[in-house]
Amino acid sequence: MQIHDAREGHSTPEMEFVAAAEGVTVEYIRQELAEGHIIIPLNRNHLTIKPLGIGRGLRTKINANIGTSKDCLDIEEELKKLDVAIQAGADTIMDLSTGGSIDEIRREILRLSTVPVGTVPIYQAAIEAVQNKKAMVEMTVDEIFNVIERHAADGIDFITVHCGLTREAARRLKKEGRLMDVVSRGGAFTIEWMAYNKRENPLYEYYDRLLEIARSYDLTLSLGDGMRPGCLADATDRGQVQELIILGELAQEALAKGVQVMIEGPGHVPIQQIESNILLQKRLCHGAPFYVLGPLVTDAAPGYDHITSAIGGALAATYGADFLCYVTPSEHLRLPTIEDVREGVIASKIAAHAGDIAKGIKGAMERDIAMAMCRKKMDWKGQIEASLDPVKTQAMRDSRAPSDSDVCTMCGEFCAIKILSKEKAWDFGDE
Image 1 (cartoon, rainbow, N blue to C red):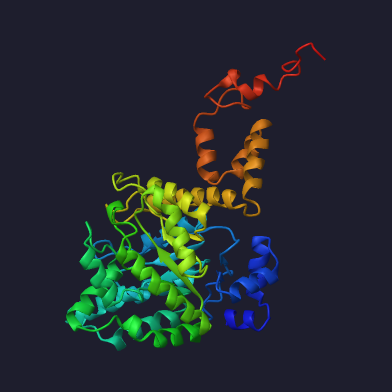
Image 2: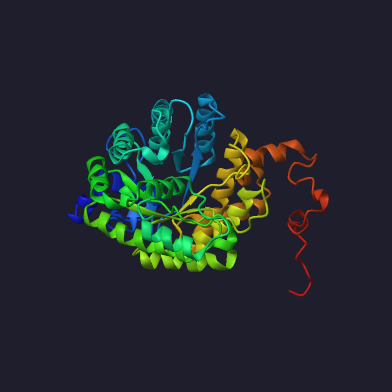
């Protein structure tokens, strides 16, 4: 196990790989992993992928969600989304399938993915309860944990589990009141289960059982924010903060048991509250890696939520978020298309890169300097190679190629760089 080895002072091949990829020392990775500030989500049954580091001092990573729904069951399309997302630069994939043969889909994604894969097992547990002619709220504790173990045994690298959504946290949220209540599917399932069964959240009550499964497979827990705000008006309220306090406690318990953990965060957050949300998580969760959805900085731009989330994601990364979950143009509207997936990944990639420049991550500013030098020399090949989306950069350049190939069709012969590159352009006759 990565944490056990790190605490024993041993570096693993995975730590060495991550250190080389990030341009830091192996000792840095080992120490930060031992303290819970870095994770390497890599199930011991999923050895066909390269190790990936997420956390303090490392490049901000991005995740792409794919998966079927009851209304869209085309597994081939989801596998194309997998390819497109990875080609565009996604560091991880989450399979959120809720339609069709969920086991088959997950295993095929695991087989074909070259990056770590995550899931939300409660989805499948609820769906299987319904398939077995029961209400979702009638699924048993054993059925929930059996699905979790099945995902772990298949090789899933990280799972979202809503362990911090306790009965007390739900009561506080209800007492305060919200405009949109709970928008997390896993959160809604959990609240309904607790209300129907008059019992505590089983993922909280039997947390030790969850940790034992995670330890067995070196499965990383992504402690989900079941009460994340679904609109700006609900951001940073008592329900959200209460759950975060509990997640901080659970993260420490996991770390003590040698289980890698990260914390999930909002959601929809006004732009002026992003910094305080990051600082709050880092303080309450003792520097555990922070995985945020967006955050979206306005609720009023459906069709453009890849942009609203990129704005929030850039600020979140700047202030210390370690992992961005992409948002596509389809958010709130439909299951994303293949092109939506690509646009979502690129938007998050831009946000992550902007945050890395602000954080001083090695190689981030160097990429922008390389682009500037290529623009100065009107080196179009170099500009395309330095681009965060070389495919689109090349296509747009080719679509209106100018007759004078060293300029673009915006300025042509009046290009400022070309004008001032002439030998006498800076000759003022006063030297």
